Length: 444
Ligand code: GDP
Image (cartoon, rainbow, N blue to C red; front, top):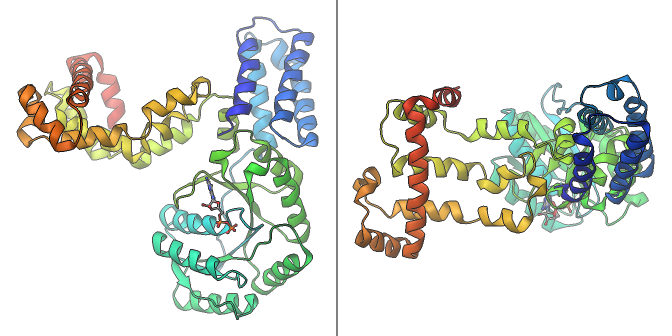
């Protein structure tokens, strides 16, 4: 995500980072490069102008020129202003109304509206412990109603059925009544989209809005459309009192023009971003983290949250205790570690969030992503309990048997055993004292 913008900006920034002294002229030069990078990323011109202006005022002031590390100070200013232009703070959904809190979804066809309804249902259920009902008012596309029904099934949301012969306003009124009876906390309303903005669609969604008075009206827009996303969002926002924007498909958006333009052009906060097609492909939009990611400073905060959510604390503590007592790290422990890694979406998901990863070519990243972890787990699963506890037993003939059992080559088994030996050695060192602090860290 945002790779191409990130690559351009981090190039400029690395040149300036180590400078002990900055002059007005090399600041101007750096800002010229930042400006070009933003324009190439399809950021809307008024946004680029405002951003550069704000950075310039601060950059030639005391804060940067007089700083002991002017390069770093300039980067901080750029980061702050990128954050500000995206809305500074993450903004949550407002659900503080008598149940059901109605969320109305608007957007063009193909933007990812229905997919986002599914993702939001999952998010509200898991992160905010809400009982969620979904309904489709898209009477023009029976397939869209079916799609929503499937998503509701996958995410455990209640589904209120609708028919293409009904009127959208009637459907939603009936859904609200049903949501009340079912004690649903939230009702998410999917609506019809068109390929482009047209008067009829606007009139329909305005009527829906007036009839159901939603607490949140979210505009869903495809980030791949760059600054056009901000233009469409503005048109909707002029017609409807939007409370926020969901930016979809950011996983495929290398440029970031939409992320940087939407807030400034519409005045509405980006509340979520879509990061994949699956129901869990949704992140709360944190402007500061996205700014850090764009500057390739890594998204360490999201990483920490992801680890918190997925690491099995009990297992981690057991391992820490085992290692600190000097007991042997065996293949069972390695499998636990691999499984946890898999839970976190494999190395691929983690790598994108680490500082400096923007510099690593995709061809290299793909080698450590993908299928490696499940393959390693499959190999360990083909061992006997005794072998997992005593890896020294694994001689040539046992390795050949395991290769056969797991459908791998003997070389794969040897590679895994080498990785195991390295991990075991590292754990041994930790146990002998060197890493006590680190283990304590693990225990939290
Ligand atoms: P709608 O017409 O606005 O309801 O759009 P859909 O929800 O049917 O989505 C259109 C397409 O975009 C589908 O193929 C989705 O899988 C895909 N999509 C939606 N959100 C995302 C996302 O965040 N990332 C990716 N990669 N694809 C997405």
